[in-house]
Amino acid sequence: MRKKPLDSASKPVENFVEHPKTLAELRAGIVAGITKAADLAASYYERIAQKNPRLNVYLSLTKERALAQAARVDDAAAKGDPLGPLAGIPVGIKDVLVMRGAPATAGSKILQGYRPPYDATAVSRLEAAGAVLLGKINCDEFAMGSSNENSAYGPVRNPVDTERVPGGSSGGSAAAVASNMAVATLGSDTGGSIRQPASFCGVVGVLPTYGRVSRYGLIAFASSLDRVGPFASNVRDAATMLSVIAGHDPHDATSSPAPVPDYAAESDQGVERLRIGVPAEYFAEGLDPEVRACIEAGITALQAAGCTIKPVNLPHTKYAVPVYYLIATAEASANLARFDGVRYGPRSKDSATLADMYRHSRDEGFGAEVKRRILLGTYALSAGYYDAYYLKAQQVRRILAEEYLRAFNEVDAIVTPTAPTPAFKLGEKTGDPLAMYLADIYTVTASLAGICGVTVPCGATKAGLPVGMQVLARHLNESTAFRVARAVEAAKL
Ligand code: GLN
Image (cartoon, rainbow, N blue to C red; front, side):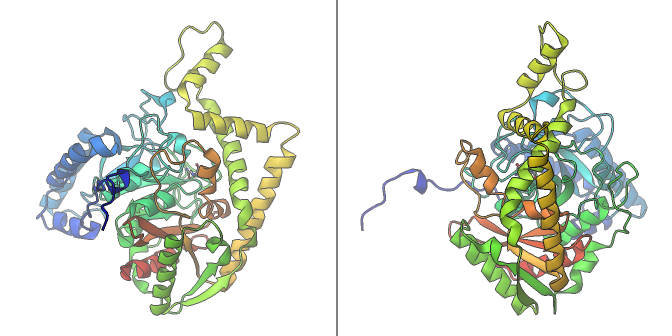
């Protein structure tokens, strides 16, 4: 047999994957006094020191705060005081969520040096539950992107294969869990930014219902779409995280007053007799055959677990990507107007006039993708185009949402691939923004509709790249999505 030439394809894959213990196991050790939260935090910082130089996940560490919190947990454990659901659990925070006194860059140069004076609600709830906050995690600039290559601080590498992207925009949050540089993390999802990177890195990611988790302290991208949600290595841990961060917040007028269930306990309920919808529109042209095979195996596993599988129709799905990119860019152009070199971040030097100072500060501070979106969004909102683009997009958004609600009259959950392909190579799509946008096809519709979902690992390609299944459920039905995801996880595909 002829030997293959030594090309880049035969280079061994560099892999940093490491599975953390489960949150419940770690917490039990801390409660019993077998594990010290301080030692656990130290071991995570050691692992970060080893892996971060290669993976570029953490942008800054919040060691002082983490160690103080760990000490508080250890004291409480020693005294036998009651401990929170996340006692001593090392957690990382996407750098679009603010933490008091810690740098908050949103992956952008324009926020360099900004240290917010307050905590995001999701962050303070984690801490109140006993979590140890390790640091701030890399992401695409202002959460705009699908590969993490838009960060002003360099791309994150995928722990499964360092030549590949971790997905985006919360690529660092997914990579942190996959490489065990955190037990769980927070990310944000506007059009897929939790689900797609979780799928690319082989971890669990949650898109909570719009309004389920407060956006207070989340640096805004597109306010009618932005959600905060958790990543974890398994479904139950992700459910525990969501119960901690969810719930009404007077600081966010769009936050839901609905009571917060114990999602982890509810996820134990099994899936027997659940009706699972499979939309043909999500299995059409453009879906990688290996991804399709994984998702089909997942659907077979659900059937074996006692679910009924039903076809459902979501015929307007093809409009979701253009609608999303109209609405998201329009809202972004308004939200990003506040970055002007005056209130936050660096100011351009030597400008003769105020207008010049704004222009130069924004020109120097924003990256190419952010500028592209501000331009697109400003155009869509401008007089004469508003009705043709923005208003039309809002009308189609309503139709997309109604289509889901109709489907949910017949099924309890809908399953789809999370992304059309597994993780792609670094640099593969950077020259073609449209190709990058089109790959968001399976995630943006749920974003527009406001419904919830979970992405769960569902097998891998022959090359070992993880594939995620997206499980969608109707508004405030996270528990159903968790139950289905648990069944897929249990199948060990
Ligand atoms: N990839 C999508 C975008 O670039 C989604 C980003 C997100 O969810 N924050 O807009």
